[in-house]
Picture 1 (cartoon, rainbow, N blue to C red):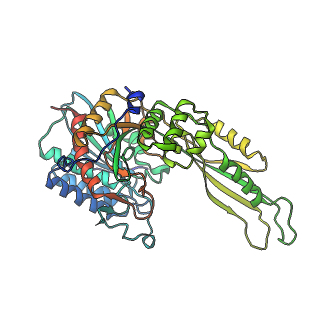
Picture 2 (picture 1 turned 180 degrees about the vertical axis):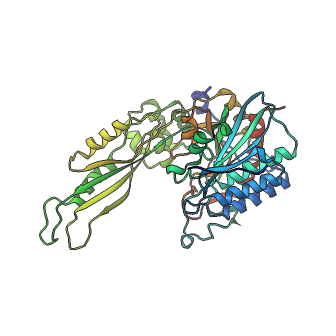
Picture 3 (picture 1 turned 45 degrees about the vertical axis):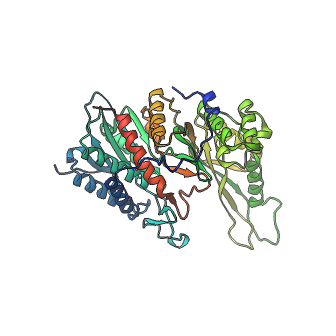
Length: 476
């Protein structure tokens, strides 16, 4: 049974993207706008409080959810506009509403409260203490995505304190178990059990879009329109076993290894969407050299195998071109002096949104070319269709981006990873990913050790998100 705690009382033109200007360093005299000091202090306090609460799957997020409710209540939000509830006692979601005039459907901003595990002895700092050093905030969830939860919360509190009344209600939805998935995903639960609380005309997920930087220079802000589908497969081989001194010709581990080598060498066909064409056109305009030439060759002819091979080591670009299915776990054998009875491998795929699940299995069978290798589906794909770029939303994101960073364009992007947008889009809600937090592509530490976000990027995103919330919710 679900557990609920009731409180007591039009697409950017691809051709234009290809001609975007190369960004230059911002002059010191034109500093990026910052939020008022009291708003920054509140955002930092919320950030530190949230990072300090272990919200890994084993611990749950109820404590963090209660802490947020206490913050909103202290800021004057009535209990009628606060909700805490979820699928399990330790798996709680938070929904907060700032009422507008009701002349247009609500706009909902989303981020998740849970984080992946972190082992203290592998980090240089305590992962569950917000630490500021070397120009960064360090800690588990600083990038994925407790920083965004703090930013959204501080901004809604700021808007209420200012007495601002929007055209559209603003809803914040902070959910549990985005990282773990399974039967406790908060967005899935809210849509099924409390749909009215999160019904909105527009969803902006702060976990699904970031500003991109390279070598310390901002390239562009992004608006996520689609994401790859998460899918997990298994390969298994069997043998009779026996003593290692009298081996059989057929060894399950060797057979599995041959299958993995074939699969690792294979690349799914390149297939480009309007979003990925726009993104790659912009990317080629920034990087130059052989990488840009290969990207342009792919844009001209997606079947150019040589260009695709040249881009295989460009991980960001390669992930945009096609579905990917690397091997992530291998196990086999039971003793060094015994022939293996069983060997297995896990294949973790990120499939293009329109990839056909049956064709993926058929591809595995064809590439592996060994009927003795069993192929299992451990986690089937649950794709969501891309969201067509709404010209009004794009124009708003572009305008606010220019206010913050005058020379930066906005580029559509398909996320290589997964987010809760699969549920929002699956429910028929217009959904995009935007955050305004800039991260250098060489320093992506989400899910890894020493996760961190630049201090300046956090405070810039605070002001960007404040302006975007006002712009999307509309004036009185």
